[in-house]
Length: 376
Image 1: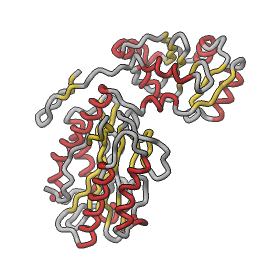
Image 2: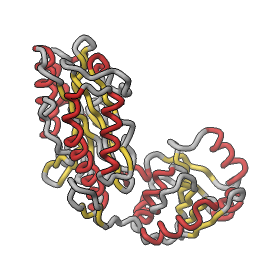
Image 3: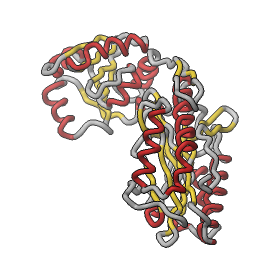
């Protein structure tokens, strides 16, 4: 499969993913979770296990089969997407009879796992009292998410393609910062270019924050005009076949003052130290420490007000976390961000972020935009 993009982007080969093998890998984890089967209700996890991209479904991962229940809107889509993924499943289409279908499919199971992070208390009570009254319901944590942490070559190729689109989009629109656009105008131009270059969409709501707004890590674009002297934090990504990239660059319009220049230099150096620390077997909190200790030594400990990073994949925020509280250890195939920042309301904010693949012998940044801080 090839991503064809117009003009400024080369064709990007998207390698095959082993979607069909994921259910068996999940089944191998069920004994440890003390259940015989798993009812998957998280729609992203359903996509991961089956290739189905719709917005409504339930999936029973049974010891002997997969049972996928959805409604009539997705009848043809289910057949096409499961066939393309090579996934064998019993597909049931029902708008009103999901309970009956799932109850029958779970008959004879002594213990059925539920995804604790995606099932509400009310849903659990319904499942226990009405759907599966004769089955012991077991709360499980991260059974599918644990599999999703380690990306295969097909997943990595999609994330590389998403990163390449984001890189090209920023390069195309970056010079327009000299034209005094509003944050909203620049964000819209960036989002439009991402789609023009072949992405299915943006990875998340794009952040463009200038001046004092840049001191708020998750500021939304406003009607503020970007002018000389503004630090501009641009946090964005692209999405290819469901997989996402995540990148932040901070650009100064005009000439930075002495504090802004020092902020830029400090975050750039801290981010480089974090990336250099990545490798298999490294504790995620050590990546945070590499960034945070440098910023602390520069006297800005209180201005770094968030964790250093997070996993990326089908979701923009997924395991493993990269923070001082994280208990994760990195493995080859993990994809994480490294994004230290300094935020001073009187001067603005600086954040620099890359999406980084953990390899067998270190790491490789998927996002490659230059970290130069001038507009051009």
